[in-house]
Length: 341
Ligand code: NAI
Image (cartoon, rainbow, N blue to C red; front, top):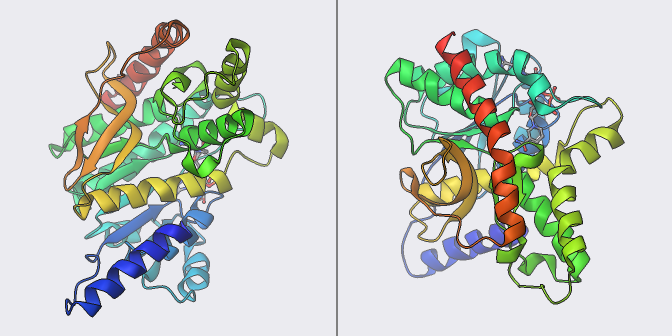
């Protein structure tokens, strides 16, 4: 993040010295659920982003305080807090990217699907407002269960007649962040130089890290048992945090970091940066299910291109097959909810 801040300020400085008055374009970002465990540190990180000129912080309550606090930081984004449903439209108007971490988190013993009852309705009503007030914005859906909330968002926008498949993105970046951390640690690599694609969905066995495609390749250092343990740890990373927090919620700080990385990637794409590639859960036809996370290219309109899975080894092929029933069921559950079935 600091490297990207430095890069951006170097960019602006060099443009200035060549006589251009250009920096990065003005961009508005809205965070819905900004007073929550994820929302607060995510708002802080977006305030530090060189790509944000206006930051709208929305929650049902508590946002005036968060906004006043964050607004004192001497970075460029102008910050405003919005509390309560009657201010939601104002918060969304003109937004380029809307990040949604609103909803309840898991407690020990809960699966992400246990959150469905509460979070499905929250996501539907917030996405409805996005469809009305900022239909062109890129939506970054963090609220769980992502495997179902993204289909809910899509169906909700379809009903409003404003759905654009390039603009609804489920945030799975934390799975990538975890896979990179665990892989680098185990293989003794510099984590800043490591990349690991993670595909599928965002819950348990639907999370599939592709260590055979990891860069750098450390196959000679890791046994099959190591890869199996790394895969399981990535799949259970969220539960590791839920258990350690012992009833006080799920990942918030690492999620805020991952959410900010992903939102920055969306903004860089919108700004015309040519090489922005991230894993994200989107409407997709690269597998037999209608939503899937894989590497995509982010550009001026959002998702510009969805990449295939590349070659998978036997272990990964088995993982892909094993996830399908759960992923399909979660997708169908989301669609049925949004259609009111
Ligand atoms: P939290 O309970 O600390 O915060 C949630 C916030 O949402 C609260 O401030 C609450 O007031 C707000 N909220 C509830 N209903 C709202 C509405 N209708 N409009 C606006 N705001 C509303 O929860 P936390 O820890 O921040 O988690 C939020 C969500 O993110 C959960 O669903 C959690 O499962 C999910 N999550 C997703 C991850 C991912 O990788 N995609 C990782 C970790 C958590």
